[in-house]
Every structure is written in C-alpha cells, then in structure tokens.
Amino acid sequence: MTTPTVNESREKRVDLLVVGSGIAGLVTALTAAEHGADVMVVSKGTLSSSASYHAQGGIAAACGDDDSPDLHAADTIDAGRGLCRPSAVETLVTEAPARIDDLQAWGVRFGPELGLEGGHSRSRVFHSRGAETGREIELALARQVRADSRITVVENERVLGLWRERGRCAGIIAERGPISSPATLLATGGAGALWSRTTNPRGALGEGIAMAYRAGAAVADLEFMQFHPTALSANGMLLSEALRGAGALLLDTSGERFTDELAPRDIVARAIAARGSALLDLRPIDRGRFPALIDRIREAGFDPDIEPVPVAPAAHYTLGGIVTDLDGRSTLPGLYAAGECACTGVHGANRLASNSLLECVVFGRRAALAALADAPLGFDPEPAEALSAEVDRVDRKLREQMWLGAGLVRDAAGLEPLCKAPALVPRLVAECALHRHESRGVHFRADFPIEEPELAAHTVLRQGQEPLFERWS
Image 1 (cartoon, rainbow, N blue to C red):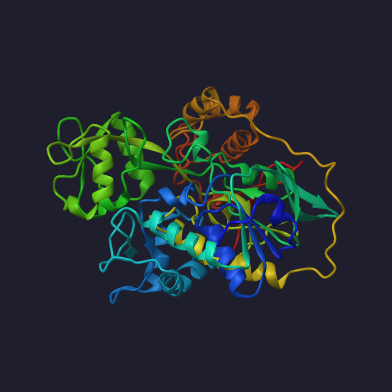
Image 2 (image 1 turned 90 degrees about the vertical axis):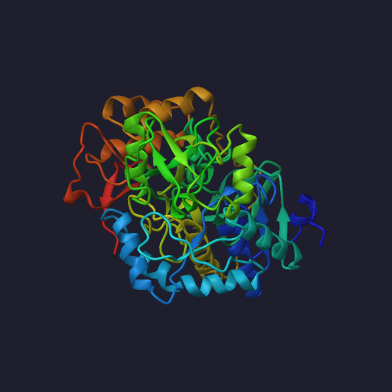
C-alpha cells in the first residue's frame, strides 16, 4: 500500500486521529481499524524512528506455569513504592496474556524462553531476537498499519499543538495546517531527551505532554524520571536489563560486585552513581543470545569477550505524563493518551522492567475502543486557520541544567532555577519535584531523604492551579 501524501490524507474525514507512531500509537490505530474506524496516524518522523523501535527490553506477561497475574501485580506494586494505582495494575497484568496473543497474531515472533529481569519474582519477560524486542514489535505493527486500507499514515510532520473548541479537543495544529477529528490520541512518547545523559532518541522532549497541558488537560507525576542503571558511558547507548537478567555482573573499579544486579532500577542506579563509575561484566553470559547488541558494543570500541565495559546511569523512562483513566481518556473531552506520554498511575514511583511495552499494548487498545465509543454526534468544528501553537526550544545548556538540577539526586537549590527554564516541561518537572518533600522511588531529594507515608499520592498539575496530591484507586 502506498502511503497517502499530506494533501490526499486531509481530504479524508477520520474517526480517530493518532499522534505518534510508536507501539502505543500503532496498536491504537490497528485496534480502531479492526473495529471499522477510519484512522490517521501522524508521525514526526518515520514509523521506525520512535523510542519503541529502540527498546531493548522485553514485554512482561504472566504466562509461565509457575506464574500468575497476582504475582505480576505484586512485583509491579513493590517496584512502584506505594504509588501504583491498584486498578491500573490489575488491568495491566490481567490483560497481558491476551495482548501477547494479539502481538503474535500481528506477526511478532517471540523466543521460546521467558526471561528474568530486575524486580520480577518469576521469569515472565518475552523477548524477540534477544535485545531487539521493541524493534521487532514496531516493524511487525508498522507492516500491518501500512497494509490496512482504513489507516492513513502521514510521516515527517510535526504537530505544534491541539485544536481546542467549545471545551473539547477537535484535532491538531500541524506544521502544514490543522487536522480535525472527533477523537485525538496522543502517543508521543516521553521526555528523557531533556536530560543530557539519556537512552532516548533526541526528539523525546515531552512535546505531547506540553501540548496537552497547554490545551487544559491535567498532567501528573513528572518528578518521576526513571534513570536506567546501565548505559554505555562513552555514548549513552542502552545496555539492556536482559543482560543482567541473564547473569551479567556489575563491578566497581577494583573488580568487586557492589549491588544486587536485579534490584529495582532506582536502587541500582544510585548505587552506581555513588561510586562515580562502574563496569558491566558480560563474560559470564551467553553473548550469542544478544548478537545485535554485542555488535554495537564492539562498534563503540569495547570487546565484552575480554573485559567489562564502563556503564553509568542515564535518563530513560518518563513515569508521569497526561492524566488518563483506564481507557485513555484525559481530563479534556475528545483527547486521549497512551504509552509513555500518559499517566494512568500504573508504574507508581519506579517502573518494573518490561512493563512499558506492555502498557503500550494494553492501554493503547483500551483507548482505541473508548475513543470510538465516545464519538459525539454531529461533530463539525469551525475552521482553525487562526489558531497558533507554542514551540519550546531545548538546547545543550538546558539539558545539562536538567541533569544537574533534576538528576538522580536533587534538592531545592538545584530545582528552583529550572522553574524559569525556557521550555514548559522542565518547568513542570521542577514544580512537581519541589512539591514532593520526600524521597520515593526514582525521585530522591538530598534535602528530604526519607519516604513519607502521607505523601503516597500523585502530584497533579492543572493550568492556573497549585500542585495537588491526589490518591487514585
């Protein structure tokens, strides 16, 4: 199927407009199309340029004989440090096996063995081609999307803002003009590239979170950025959790182990940071299980067959985002969100490894069904040519400020200057982090190093209001 041009695509009225072409966006599009909807997917790049494509970890589901959704839920809640939304966790783990079946039906091929990763009490992680799981899922879904006559794909078009009319979202404002739809879903990914050391592609700047907030939708938990413990020190390349799950060891400069490699990521990351540097020893594992990743390590100038490779933490996954219910609905009617840009509360204060791709599939599907069910009658918005949108500029200096002020260990002195940052999302991150006077999960404040039970709540931001703590059931 030939991808329609921008002009061709805009002559077609669609039932659902999806912004973003990672796994969450593609699952949403395919689900809606399977239920008879006409869908448009708008991507800032190509279908293979998302953060999902680069995801090395697997996708978790309780499918083993010794496993159960209850055990998966317990591990998720333990990792989330008292902040996971119970109903979201139950939804995630209960629907996980069926969503694995969906992916296989769409052409994803998983390996025969379930893997063990940090924080999991059972081997329940599905992998595809070793550490290429995100890539393999993304490519399989992209093939399905391109072959579906109900789905129009618009690539290399940046979305500048949301089209809001009469108190609801009516579509988007793109670089080459407005596009309307009764239902708009943001699947724009996270904000990890706001930090100078990151595993994310450079375009992961939280743009969907910013446009949702500016349009009036609530956002939450932006103080919780998960730092992956093992990025290659030389270039920030992610070295998958699956390596440690297979038996790779973390060593200090004296060659001694200093932490539990499979402890939750916040604990491992801070243990590495406390030493200033660390080495990941891949010699104890079968490196042939991860051929593409081992090749990339060698291309970076290291030989993991001979000696350990230097690693350091890097900004990895945005736990907060656009507030949604369990069906992807934001607080702005007509606007939905799924994947890393959304905040259902499922991850709490520290995401369990390999729950992120699962989140995309479970809540992407639910958002698609809700968007179709909610479709208003007689949707006919006014022309939007006069509307404008704001574009934030993020430069190297701001990324360095984020790393220093809102990094693994933060305090008020480092966070307060970020409240005057030239971009919106860094300001929102700082506002959330300053409001939480405790350390919990990935949010560690040197000036408030203790976890406070009364702060087991979500930090919610709404335009024109002070931050609020809310408890979600």
